[in-house]
Length: 205
Ligand SMILES: [Mg+2]
Image (tube, rainbow, N blue to C red; front, side):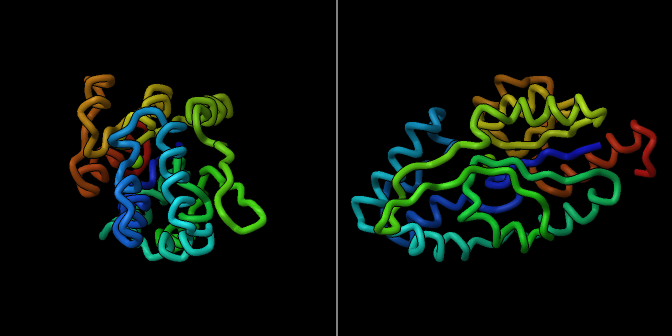
């Protein structure tokens, strides 16, 4: 069994709005919960950072202040006994590695930035965008059952291809696309859903 879990909005707060608050940049408050087109969203974010003259190093330092949600570390610790944990996210490795360490050091599958000679963000390599379904299909092809959990439309393909999709405090548009999937409003509730799935699959629960 593999748990493929989204990061931002599920295990930790959204990183970009934290940057927006810190640097006073309005565009950075937009997230995948607000803008469905990720390329468009990223272009707006990067243009805003570059207009402010910020380097990746400066932005990264502030991104690293983000802490997991209370209980997120314990949630993963409880489920890891009965499944492999993979965090699959549209965030960026440069931003999220410290929060991953604070969550207990799980594997993160995310995107990467490209920087220019001045250290500014010049572009991004989307390793995850559009690949979530493929990652899940790969795990299933290797014989694993997959529990998927996410909160936004960018998790739709992950959730659609998972054996057991769980919507975590989902945006309305996601709930509309997957009306039969169970919805968790907190990590305690999500944990009960995971334990039930483990029991159905012959685990100790
Ligand atoms: Mg999310």
